[in-house]
Amino acid sequence: MKKIFVILAVILIICGEFFLFNRNEKSEEVVFWTLQMSDFSSYINNVITEFEAQNPNIKIKWVDVPFSEGEKRTLASVLSDNPPDLVNLNPDFSATLAHKGALQEISQEDLTQFNPEILNTLKVDDKIYSIPWYATSAITIYNKELFQKAGLNVPKTYEQVYQNAGQMKNKTGAYIFLPNITENDTMLKILNKYGCSSSLSNCSEIFNMFQNLYAQNLIPKETVTMTLQEALEKYMSGNIALIGAGANFLNMIKENAPSIYAVTDTAPQLTGSLKQNDFSLMNFVIPLRARHKQEALKFALFLTNDKNQLELAKLTNVIATNKKTLQNDFYTHYDEKDLMAKARVISAKQLNNVTPAFKTEKNQKEINNLVNTAVQRILLGEPAEKILDETQDKWRMLGK
Image (cartoon, rainbow, N blue to C red; front, side, top):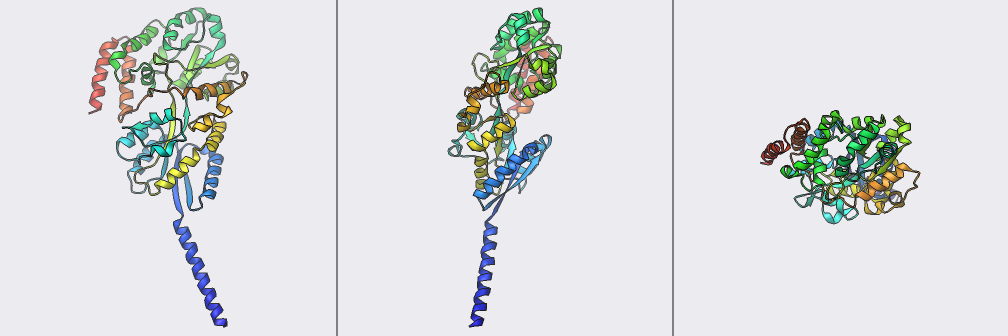
């Protein structure tokens, strides 16, 4: 009898170990890459812990990649046989990888929790290969004191900037703004507000407007090469009346130029004839060769649910992409004395009017360089029509 009990005990131990082995074998490890999010490690680790508790058969391995290495490391990994399962990228590079056939298509039925206008901007050949994470939408940050001194209202359009630039300079000695139109895709986004970002020859009047401002010394000579960060420094010195920037720049002004912050206010971003807004986005992609696609999608949707989006927004002041989160008081109400809250509400509201969205192309970086070179030549006095015809021809060649 004793032998029977011993045998049964051994069998139970073996069965138990077999069960544990199989349970562990079924546990899937999702490799998750972000871009320079280590400052928010506590938040991300908490989300991972909560997700794993709800999904005991899925483990998340989080790797934070330096921003400067993101594209290089991602390109190498997605072409390998063992890429990460979920990768944080910007839409430009995501679209490039989608055109190369390196990404998994995401069913639009799985993305119903997101702002539809944002989703529409992610389409590549009417398909979606990205999951939106968070957005920013530039606002107008302006110096109330300078506008009062100049006797001007804050402009709403680029045309109003053009019309008021002379009065601002004459009355205050300050430039009305410093447009960073030779940086990245800034000029193309402005052109998109007039419905002509892919047909430069039809937009010569926009280029002529900036050329005239430059020739008349109504925008700084540094406009030829200056970045947004450098424009911000000019604003903080009181030499620029307005800049178009994300709400997060208000913190920099508050910390580095408190006297300028005291006379700073915010308004919606400058628009063109279409009255549409532009925005920037960070998203997630799932490489086509990823081993755990469904688990990666499940985690991405958990990370971007309304609760987790709101928590991230309160930590970082970014704009959520989840529809329910955008309806929260955090994005719809503000105290007039709270400038950061006002900026956040303005930014969030702008996401409801981003159509027609600026669309990236597979050779977007080369296109950006073409357009930025054209802008520099036009600012320096070359005929806009001639330069734009040449640029359009080179653009077409890139598409072949």
